[in-house]
Image (tube, rainbow, N blue to C red; front, side, top):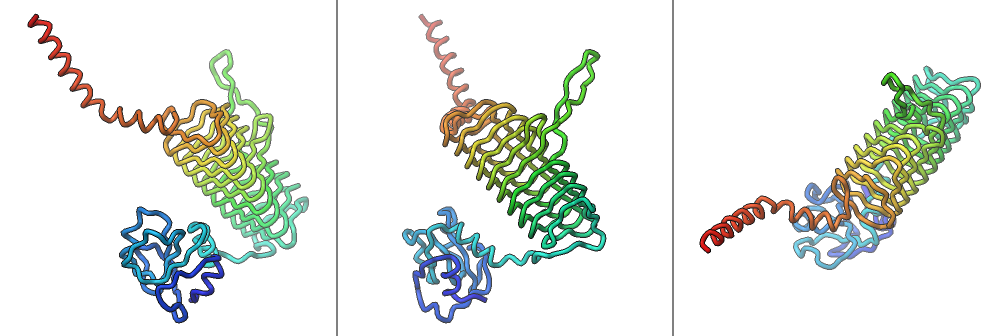
Amino acid sequence: MYNIDAIVSLIDGEVINHGSNDTVLIKGFSPLNEAEEGELSFYGNPKYFNDFAETSASAVIVQDVDNLPESFTGILLKVENVYAAVAKILASLDKGPAPRKGRGSTAVVSDKANVHENSYVGDHSIISPEATVCEGTQIMENVYIGTNVNVGKNCSIYPGVRILYGTSIGDNCVIQSNTVVGSQGFGYTPTADGTLKKIPQLGNVIIENDVEIGSNCTIDRGSIKDTIIKSGVKLDNLIQVAHNVEIGSNTVIAALTGIAGSAKIGSNCMIGGQVGIMGHITVADNTKIQAQSGLSKTVKTPGTVWHGSPAIDYRNYVRSYAAFKNLPELLNRVKTLEKELERLNESE
């Protein structure tokens, strides 16, 4: 249990007190519509106003104390950023596995590998020759680390991950279960008899610091140059990154997105789920691409928003869709006007 003062200290908040907080103990953390007395919740989106009005939470984290439901009589904790505060709360509650050292009894570590004594290699994991695993890194069970792979400090590599030869991973990275990094890129050339000949993929994958990659992603090695994922990038589950792709720092990409070969994504972009990005195009910094969009051309202007397939400017898309959904009615009106015009012409 936590008292209010401890929570305020953790999230750097300010108490807007509806009563005395001296005796309030927080026993849990829940969404507004599920919170019970004695629990902490948060309010960061006006669409949950009704949930806030009906919540039983004893305390709620808010960003703005104006326009709140009068029915709430608990404690308000004001912060600069609700979701940053929530992240701190969740981190304090995270009871994931504690860092370990050493090797599982069935781990296979090559004598030619360089594995730091303060790292961990789990059961049935394989560390190949010339691979490096740095201090504090957790290689969990059933992981394969290929030849000449470098994994930096304090990384978490979850069960079932395959990191293939030559891949370089920076510090503080997280790769979730069953992701494959460094697989052969999808490159073929047609021959005279109509068959397809494989083009060797000679590049590597470079992942910089503080990158997080979800489960079941596939990141292909470059064909000649490297595939590069820059610092701070966050990838959701089930994402395909093709050969020679470059993803700029602090870009976030949601699940089921596919990025074709040699596309270059800028920094601080936000890409929704099920987005398709054509190869050999460039996407400017701070671009937002809405879910289920198909981007087929270069985006030159930073900070724009795109939607649709093929994707167009979001504001243009909204106006266009407003017209599109009314097409049946408009068509009927046109037919009616044509008939009226035909009748008028006949009467002359």
